[in-house]
Amino acid sequence: MTSFHDILGTDKNTSGADIKRRYKLLSSRLHPDKGGSKAIMQLLVQAYDKISQGKGHEEAVRTVYSKSATPESDKQKLQQLERDCLALKRANEELDRQYKLELQKNRLLAEESERYMGASEDELKWLRRENRRLTKQLDEARWKLSDTNRTVSAVPDREDVSSPLGEISPKVISQIKAIGGINLRRIGFMLMVPMLIVGLLFTLGREPWLAILALFDEPQPEPEVRVTILNSHPDDNLQSPDQPAVLTVSAAPDKPQPVQRILLERTVGVWQLRYFEDKNHPYIAVRSEKGSYIVKGCDTKFQYYRNSNLRSGRLAANLIFDRKERHFLVYNIPYGNGSFAGNWAESKSLLINREYFPNEGFADAYQRLEQICTF
Image (cartoon, rainbow, N blue to C red; front, side, top):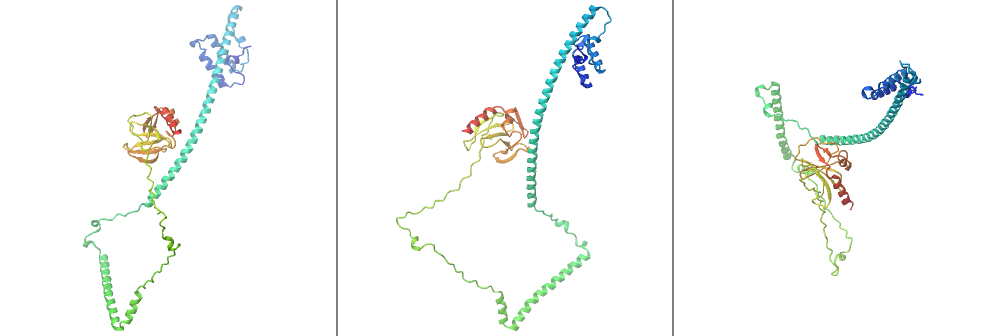
């Protein structure tokens, strides 16, 4: 027995939204305009109506009525309906299979998205911690710089300060006169003091004056006695003729190690294996169109050699300044874009500081560098 639920692929627990969705899918595929038959479309419409009325468990074939009373025609229509019903079941099974595949794909995409979001959140947390650390260092540097600065007050010009004598107020003139009177009394007092001292000298005699001068004389320092203690007998210091003389050799200070300098290339956009100028150490590098380099050595991570002739701008947070070499400003790339080999191997080119660096030849150059570094 074929019920209306079998035609649409539903049951009594299916919600109205799912029933409507399955009806739309089947009608869009079996519509007469798309190669279907009118009988199948009528059967679909009737099944949808019956299921909506709560009569989906009834048998679908017995509900089909014919105007003609001929048994042979009814038999043919019944067989046609059974074939149409079988076709609907197959289409329903195909839709179920596609629906399960889509559910599985969506589940895999959701799991992949969760893993990617987890990795992105970890990297975002690390970047936030690094940002806080760099902000703290920047605040400390600004505090030290502000502590060393000194405020300097501007000195006004003489032309602005000076004014005509007629503009001075009487109060200021009286203060100037008072200051002049004070200076005259001070000079008179200073002239009277030596005269009083000379008068006392003639009246009291020489002895009190000599006693006063003796108070200001500094006492003579006592002679310093130095005692030298010999740890050995003087005869032991005499060198025997058979004993060889000891030579003192002064060791020269170590010279500073030369800075590793890269070779300048004319080839643009190709990774190549090269050796530093001052040392026989290998490295791989690629040159951009603007003259900058990305360098990777055995003992160092990826570094960005920025051409100092370029116009300076705001750099990314993962570019940490290291040193200056010739006309390059060398920046370390400890994290982020371009910091590990996976970035270069999985992409055609990377954009670093508004410069494109291709990955052409990176795999071969990096493999050769690893082989040389291991030996």
